[in-house]
Every structure is written in C-alpha cells, then in structure tokens.
Image 1 (cartoon, protein in one colour):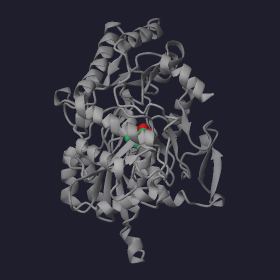
Image 2: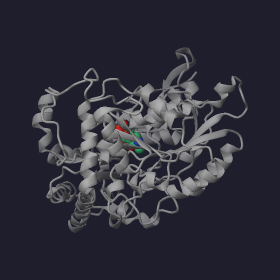
Image 3: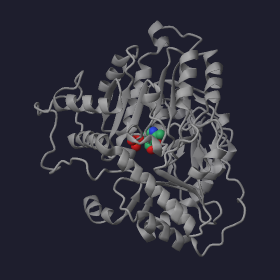
Image 4: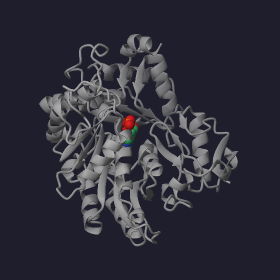
Length: 500
Ligand SMILES: Cc1ncc(COP(=O)(O)O)c(C=O)c1O
C-alpha cells in the first residue's frame, strides 16, 4: 500500500527534489484525528470575501509577509493558480461583451517555457494565446526566459493586429534563471498600459525571504508584477500541493475579477492541513528564512565543489551564467539549485538519475538527455552533498569522458511557434470525427490535435493547432528511448492525434 511505502521507504532517501519541507514549521499533531471541513464554523471561511476567522488572519499575515495587495490560498499548487489566472483573462473577453465578431481578438502573450497548466487552462477557457519568442540553452537543456527585446518584439507585432490583454512569463525558470522582470514590466506598461502582467513564480516562494548577499533573483511582486503565483511546496517549505496567488497593491488592479475567478475555481473542501502548512511555512521563513535559504545555497555550493573535487568532467549552469545574453538578470541566479551538464559522458542525465535513485537512494529533481538538476531542500541533512558526490563518483568513475561535445541534440525550434494554424482552444474542442491518429513517424507537417510533453519539465512540445516539426518528433523519440516520461495519448509514441 502507498501508505506503507511512504512510511517505510521515503525516510531512507536523500531528496534533492520537491517538496522542500521546512522541518521547523509548526505542525498539526494528529492529521487523521483533526481533519475537518467547512461545516465547522469556528475556523471561518476560506472563500469569504474577505476570508474570515483563522483563514482571514492567515491571509492577512501571508500577504504582509510577501508585501502583496492580497494573497489567495491554493491547495492545488500553481496548476490551480494558473487556472484562476486563465479564468481572470476569460472574464474580460471584449468580443463576447460586444456580441460581435471583431477583427481584433483579445490575446495573452505567453513565454514559450510556460508550464502546461498555463496552456491547458487558457485553452480550456477559450483564451487565445501567442508565444513570445525565446531561446534555449542546449548544454543544460534549459529554456531561457524571453529577453526584454523579445517581449517588445512580440508586443509590437501582436498589438498591431490584436488586443493584447496580458503577458505571462515564468521567472525564475525551472533551472533557476531569472527573467529581467523589471525591464519587461517597464516595456509592458509603456506599450500596453491596460495589460495584466502575470509572473509564474512557481519556483520562487523563497525569494522574498532570501538575503540579498546570496544574489537570488528578485521577487516579482517587489518588481511590480500584477499577479504572482507560487508553489509553496516547491521552494517555500510547505506540504506538497500547496500554493499562493498574490496580487499587487496597485488600487487600479481589477481585484474583484481575480477574486471571482478564484471563488469559481476553488474546491469547497480544501485540506485544512495543507492550508495550515502554508501559513506555518511562511511564518517560519519570515522569522529566519534568510539563514535557512543561505544553508540551501551552501548545500549546492558544497555539492558542486565536491563533484569538481572528485575530478568529474561536469559543467554547471551557475558557473556559466556569463555565457547567457540579455535574457537574464545579470549576476542573479537561484543558487539553491545545481544544474549539471553531463554531456562529456556517455551516460545521459536520465540514466544517471535512475541509477542514483535505484542504487544510492538519492533523488534528483529533474534530468534530461544531457543534464541533471538538484534542488537543495530544507529537509536535506548536512552530509547530503558528500554522500551525493560519492554516489556520482561511483557511477561515473569508470567512464572515460569525451573531450568534446557530442552531436548537438537539437530541440524543437521554438521561434517557429509564432502563429498557430488553428486556435489551440478551438482544436481542443474539436469533435472526434475531425481528428485522426497517424503513425508518429509520419506526422511531420500535420496539424497537431493533441499536446505532447516530457514530464518534467511539463512544457508542451507538440501543441494543438500548430504544425508538427520533424525535429520535434526526433527529439521526442530520442528522449523516450532514454527513459524520459511522456504525457500524451500514446506514451509509446506509435501514434499521434492530428487534424483530419
Ligand atoms: C513554471 C511552473 N509553473 C507551474 C507549475 C505547476 O506547479 P504545481 O506542481 O504546484 O501545480 C510548475 C510545475 O513544475 C512549473 O514548473
């Protein structure tokens, strides 16, 4: 049974992966004995406007800790928050309001590296989106955030023909890279004063509490974003599945629209234990978060030094930031992460990650064909870097590293995804008879009627309404052959759904 496995096996693993749990947070003593619902009135109402009772108090305290205009609680992670954001955009469709089909359509510009919850929720709610072009760092299999000039280009291009109502970017990225959010905001404010700027800061719950000396990315709320969403379980110390959705203090912000979207989406039975864990983790970070985050930075620094000390031929993203151009905030990085490129070895990051888990009981956050990502978590013991470096040495020592980079593993050309052939949300509603399954290998040039992604990172590679690229198919087949996990109708990659 899962419960038995959780009880007996999990404690034995070194977890360089989410959730990052603050061991010192105030805990609920008896989870089974205290599970309770909204029928109990004395705790108050989470969905009240404003929330009442204990929920009211915790919402105010969390909002103070993050410096937001208000903070909404999610017990369905950032995926849930992205659905609320999509609903927020869906609630202001000027075309529907005017009951006419206008030439200009409302659209939201999104970064190419947005998580699938952004795409899926926009599609599900009939919101049109277009991509902001962005680049990809092959050596680390890392998507870069769009640079301010790429954002400007997208704004100029699309606002000429459509009504751009919002922008969604991810920062920091999964790999810890910070967008130049304040510059992007300046551009958005000057070209699109009415647009809502959303930062998916799923990976940044801790940033507000970090010491500036650790040079972590700045928190998006402090830079002036309108809506910022975070997964509290990723880097914020709370239990799995928790998240926060903050909005700005700016009185002009359409707060009621967001609150309505939130009420429409939320479960009526939130786990009070998860909610309690969000509050407890935030209070813990508010007390001495800077020290605890600094310890995480020391863990990744220690791991990096030990891996180098073992003589392994690895390269590290945190040491290569200078190679990245105007896409990222200079000198800043989420140093609680360690992304290593394994390209000099014949073993892929995926194989290495499986071996670390299977043979050494060490879990990495994410791996790919040539990279592996370690996330320092609050629960890791001090000797985690030493044990992890020894395990890597045991796995890689017998291998002769190659002197040069192997043939480039080229990733699908993101720039090519500028215009869909059909609106993705329309394709996602299409009747079965208008689609058909074709052999995967013959699908190049067809229009996709489903999305395909590797998980993690959960960024769709094939997207409904867009032509399927040959290079994309090769990349997916190669990744699958190396053990990557795929999210799509047919994870064996024999067939793919296209428009008939
Ligand atoms: C950028 C980004 N946004 C949103 C999510 C979804 O977060 P959650 O797992 O909290 O639903 C993820 C998950 O990895 C993510 O990487």
